[in-house]
Length: 505
Image 1 (cartoon, rainbow, N blue to C red):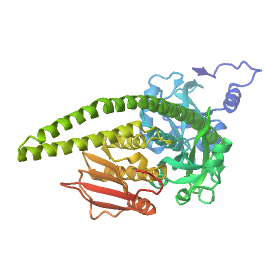
Image 2: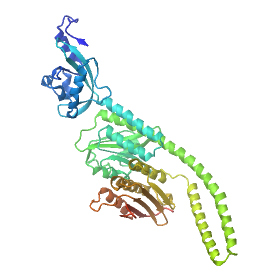
Image 3: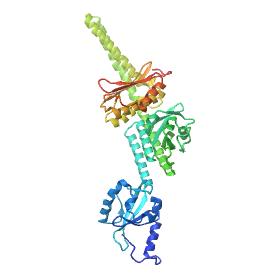
Image 4: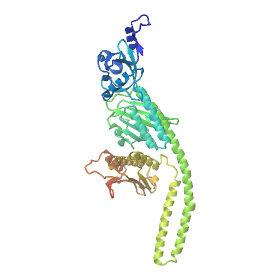
């Protein structure tokens, strides 16, 4: 407890003068209130923190410095404190906020101390802007979250989406997206969060002449004044009405492994040096997590290749040989059987031939080495797993035909974007309890199907940008998309494109 009624001990200064000098020397805003919560005095620091001159606050209720949504509870807190006033932090375990003169709120730390000036019931509140402290707490929490997702075995697409989401929240952006290499001097938007994210995912750009390519090559962040006007930004991003932007390399020991882009609204305040520092720290940590994820995938691929080789060898040396033996035995019996039984045996032999062909195709797939980019099935699994988090169940995925050979990375980008949009529509509108995803390829076509058992298409609901984007992606590749009622209920989507020239299904 501070008692300034006693005789001063510094050069004979009056107590009131000394108290005023001490208050004005404090870097924290100091607000002194009485038992009714009325401001009796405050120091000069309140001007820079709250935007009020000290004289303007005297006689005002202290709640004028508190966001309106919190004022009703503050009176109860004051009453509780008055019952046992001691020097202590205010609101331990709570998130405290102050309100500036312009109406904006900001996080604060507050310490309380009862005073005695001959008048009882006075309390001094020492208030400090906690924005930076909260930001770094959020930064550590976000880094821990993406690290935990990696340790939990989540797919890289899920981790990239989390990176975009947390970066957007960290610096107060409206949109964020992550860009990763896609081979052949190209980059691709692998994940996005916020405004226009469905339009961004799957967009491609060159490593030469793009801001993302430049950030990766130089390993340095790029500050953009207006994303809408910058000619080197993604065309899909220029249509989103964005203003200030940051383009940040996701760096690791091997160099830049991707790029993180965040954008604020057009006309919003520019990013401050503090914003840039926080975003850089987060991007650096995210780059390390992505590199660890890449190493994990490579190790899993090596383990998978070894296991696939063993399974393929067992299928060829044991299962196929036994099936051949059974087929030959059946053909021997067929020659001695009556016509009706011979016909049934012939049908069984043909079924065995079909099984043998399917097993040989499986052996071919098992012996296929890992693709140059992320494995298609792994990337599909990531999209499906992400949707499953919102649905409460994982959609089932089936494959038919040599899909990896027929679907190159350029097609995969579009297919994954369509799958993500189709599942997003099902999450928002279908009320489904089961979703079946099919991906198949033959010598002519690649087909993606998404069938749910939900409520079906609402004929009164207008098609949004998502439907148009899916159809446009098919059209760009020479194909088309159809949506129809499923049997017995729900919605069936079929996205069909011709096999790109140069591939060998």
